[in-house]
Image (tube, rainbow, N blue to C red; front, side):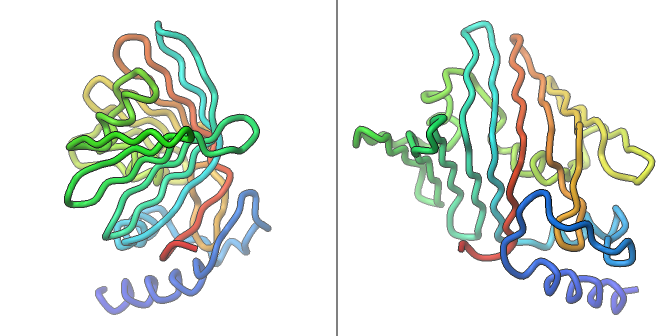
Length: 202
């Protein structure tokens, strides 16, 4: 069993080498991993990037923006873009803390990435859980409903409900391309993921 898992990981690493954009050419069915094998591969990743468009609604208002979310062992980074594609805020976090850089040059520091993101978006989002939600990886403490292919369809995480509205093939994996998270206080976050990159930063 261990040998089979290692083989699957090796094959998938070769499949995911480089950047994959959505929608890619549909892979042959034989190259798409089953859902439980997909989860194994995703949990083994130490670095990845997701980018796309987001819309956020709350009693405080509504706004749309582009985003890029990057994860690697040394740093977590979120970039927010305006409708013209210009970066208006860049947030990063390391073991030493988190910092925010705005387009006008203003900088802020905080103990957590969540606190800085709240200062930009004016709502509190569960930043610690968002990476797993982007990947479509439920945690043990989250209730999950799966579709006919075994992929998460709905997650229930404390006060949040996450619905996966669409998936797309990316290399040998099937990844979320559209999801919606509804939380407390009338907050709704909708994410359309148009690009995935697996591995170190391009």
